[in-house]
Amino acid sequence: MKLYVEKDYEKLSKVAANIVREEIEKNPNIVLGLATGSTPEGMYRELIKMHKGEGLDFSKVTTFNLDEYVGIDEGHPNSYHYFMKEMLFNHINIDFKNTFIPDGKTKDPEKYCKKYDELIEKKGGIDLQILGIGENGHIAFNEPDETLNLGTSIVNLTQSTIEANSRFFDSIDEVPKTAITMGIGTILKAKKIVLLANGKKKAKVIKELLKGEKISTKLPASMLLLHPNVTIIIDQEAYNG
Ligand code: F6R
Image 1 (tube, rainbow, N blue to C red):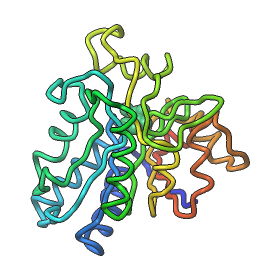
Image 2: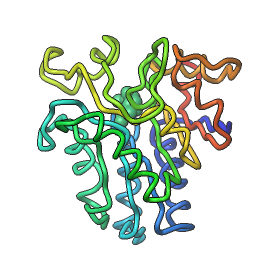
Image 3: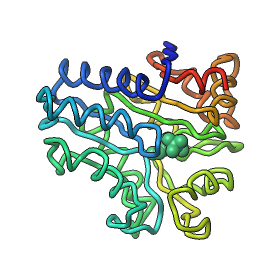
Image 4: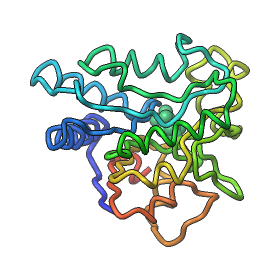
């Protein structure tokens, strides 16, 4: 596991975007795994700058997002479909046909989830997966529990995640209680993983993860300790609290 501790969020975002840029330049047909939430917003801003200023080319890039709320329309301002368009896709030359985000309104979740994993495989697997981390140690929406799902599946969000995400909604009652998420197995199949975390609120969980001693389904991010190519990029606040 490689660790970069950057001085602040801006630097963290630049370092993360540079990694993505290098990987795209090495392999223009790259398959990227993408996250939503506050953490990667700065990285997406940097990537847009790289596209507009330096011609970073996304025309052959394929993307798979980690997750989406269940029951929310794609056009809803809190949907992850909407987030990705606003934060990245509308501002770069990606072909929308090559962008995949779980469908939170699927009528047949079981079949759909299986298909999502199969599609990732069919596209050659994820080359570089970007992750954030929940205050409770979740990655994607794999919440701490007795067991964790390997494949993409529908999961219940914990109260702590509902509370953390309520900042994006008008009221906590509006936050969906379930989500569709890539499973831990799906994530661990990625060839490279970059996990980002910033701010004091993440310090406790980052400290636990960096101990690097044990894996536990109660700390889903600890599963990353099993992966051979993980880079963790955090800011000083997430490191020291
Ligand atoms: C989002 C996702 C989540 C977030 C995590 C941190 O696609 O998979 O695991 O990465 O909840 O969210 P922020 O970045 O808002 O603190």
